[in-house]
Image (cartoon, rainbow, N blue to C red):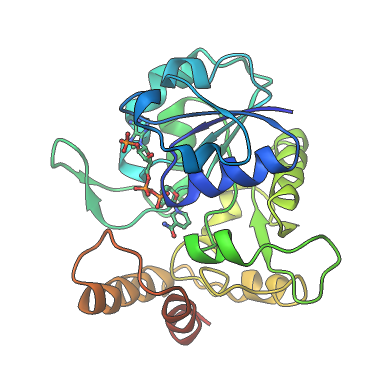
Length: 248
Ligand SMILES: NC(=O)c1ccc[n+]([C@@H]2O[C@H](COP(=O)([O-])OP(=O)(O)OC[C@H]3O[C@@H](n4cnc5c(N)ncnc54)[C@H](OP(=O)(O)O)[C@@H]3O)[C@@H](O)[C@H]2O)c1
């Protein structure tokens, strides 16, 4: 499959490596240009291109950029054919955008993203921390393989996104429509908790729309207390322990 990945930070880099290793034809881009993309991103293959090139002539576009920057890339996505599947990895945290205006995503992040982009998306890989994504993938059928929820409105979007999640080393679980995807947002029981295929359905069902934003904010406060800022990821196992304690 031909895949364009926009954003090669903590998450996009690993996706590029895994999907290239799985045999896909991968292009990657960031906001600053192909010459700024490190060789490690392309360690398993793939090509660094411009943001305009990364969304052209592909079967799937993966957006792995900060939530508040998604409106900036809407003009790029406008030109993407309707049959190209757009997959978004983003999560909302209370924040300000590049003009320092408060961003309010409402209750369902993926619906806000779809509205900003003017087209449907699939929501995938958003629930797994970057260290678990990089280090805990396993071949299909392995014991205790981590399962990741995938939400989308069309069967085509969902099937394609689920197949790619499997290719990155995780069981893909059909989590329903975008309207239901609040069940996989920060603060919910499946978020950052590295659950298995057996555990994930119960976690999605147990999500509480009222409590999860409060739990999300508690986790942010705990992480900030430990690492001192909102951009550095904490030690991987600390993050999983904290998410399990607060969200489950
Ligand atoms: N970190 C995690 O553990 C984690 C887990 C699950 C989901 N997520 C979500 O996944 C997304 C990516 O997170 P991350 O931690 O990988 O972020 P990150 O490390 O900060 O990387 C962000 C990437 O997006 C690029 N980017 C930013 N604005 C852009 C724009 N307007 N156009 C093109 N590229 C742009 C950046 O490139 P430049 O440096 O060139 O701007 C960078 O390559 C976020 O929405 C996050 O909420 C993160």
